[in-house]
Length: 298
Image (cartoon, rainbow, N blue to C red):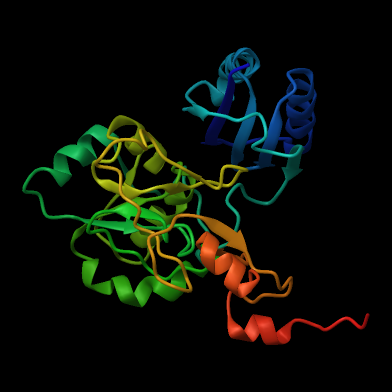
C-alpha cells in the first residue's frame, strides 16, 4: 500500500474553531488518517498521513470548502507509521510559539510571496538578497540553503531575540524560509513591523523548493515533525551532501536522537549523534546531563 503525507496550512477567519475541529476529526477518522491538526480563529495548520486514495479524498473534501479552496497541499511519500495517532486541537493560533505583543495577523501584514522558481532564478542570477532561515536551530542543523543566514533561534516565540543580529539587513532584500511556509507568514510580517523595507517569504516553504530542485541549493536534509524526522529527495544523487555533524565527534551525520535525560535543558532533547557516539555516551547529550542522571538504588 502506498502512503502519502500531507503538509498544509491556511490563514482564514474561522468563526467556530471547535466545530471545525470536530468536522476534521470525523472526516479523518473515516478516512483512517493520522497526524496533527491545529485549528484557531486565524486558520488551520495540519500534517496528515494515510493511504494514497484517502489522502486525496481528504484534499478534495477540503478544497470543496470555500474557506480552504486555495490551500496548497504539499505531498510526500509516507511510511504508514509517520504518526502514532490522530491529534486535533483548538488553539489560540496555528503556529506554535506566541509572539506576544509582536503577534500579528498575516491576512493584514506579511511578506511578499516568492515562488520556488523565482528564488531559484535569484540564486543563480546577480540579484543581491539575503535568505534568513526562520526555523529553530536544531532544525537547520542538518539542512539549510547555501549561504543563508541561520539565526540561533530556540523557539519561534523568541524572534525578538534574534532581531539585533539582523539589523544590518533592514534596507536589504530579505527572503524568509521555513519548512512549509506557515511560520514565514508571521516571521516576514514581524520583520516588516520592525522596519525592514523589502521582505519576501518562500511560498510553500523549503519542502517545495527541495522537490523542484533536489540537491541543488538546499544542502542536506529537511527536518520534519513526524516519524521520519528528516527527509530528502533523490538521496542516491552524487550531489546530495550530509551537512549535519555529530554533536560529540563532529563527523558528518544527519541522524537525530533524544537525550537520555528526560529533564535535559535542550529545547527538544533532540540532537545529532552518530551510531558510534550513541554507544559511547549512552545517549546523554552532554557531561552535565550524564552527571544529572538520578541514580536509582537496586
